[in-house]
Image (cartoon, rainbow, N blue to C red; front, side):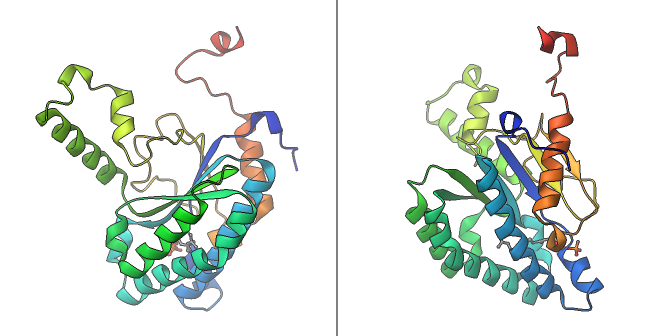
Length: 244
Ligand code: FPP
């Protein structure tokens, strides 16, 4: 496999972890078992990111649309998330990882919200890496919420229309303070972004793989990073401009 160049690492990697259901079906198991195996891939991916020096990792753990799934599956996913936080908090402390979360966190229910808050509080001063979980998250909702807050600020006389800029808008999104993702990985073979970080991914490099999320191991992650390192990010400019 190609070597990873430590000088050209993406600062922020975002992942759409898809394919848990299909993995379970292929192994003649229930969908929930697929999610459980998916949590193992989360653990391994976080460790790899920490090991190679990725500064920000955002995982699409539960979308706004996931609420439409059967109640038992939603319940199992939230339980899995709570278990993950409880089991991993010590490792986050040991590895200097700060946990943050974006999305409609209130809607997750009291118990999980509490665990999430405790984990975020406990890891708040860690500086090694940021693990950002997108939970009950939708990109369009994120933007509508930002617009709502700016309108309130406007009505309260805190901002004028002329002061509304891309930077101000970005500062009202749930991801304020995080850099935009450099690389998006989506497992499971679909080539779409499913209402993930819509604003934030304007210049993100996309990497789609057929590998189902529960099968996604360190070597798959490193392959995605190597692929990213082959790309030329022009941000609308020409290659020549970038060379000068
Ligand atoms: C998509 O697979 C995956 C999800 C909806 C949830 C992702 C959750 C996890 C990986 C486990 C828990 C998360 C953490 C952070 C511990 P799918 O069910 O849509 O798969 P399918 O397309 O094959 O049906």
